[in-house]
Length: 114
Image (cartoon, rainbow, N blue to C red):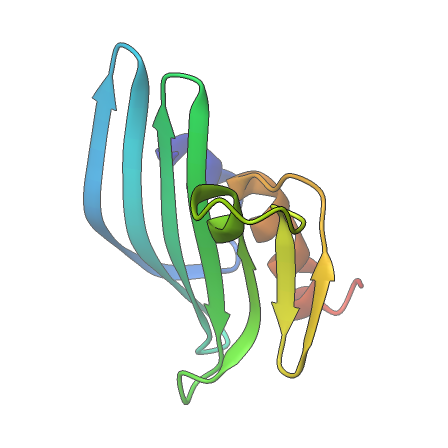
């Protein structure tokens, strides 16, 4: 995870790692990443044997949600799409998400290359 953050150091102002545990069968990563434009990303990414639980919350300077990616419904037993992208009033299905994908999308936004 730290290596991934390093790849995006030109847009990252600071990082607060709340929890980072690596185990033989998984990991737990919880961090707050602050960007050069004042926005932040709250990351919760957990891997347990054959299951993964994650949420990535991208917030503006006033802590208002820009986008939230998550797979919570997969864990509550719903038959609905497991992977979702929440954008203000809109929710849409989304492919499985990884930390680097999220940082790449934020980088495009910050650098104006979207």
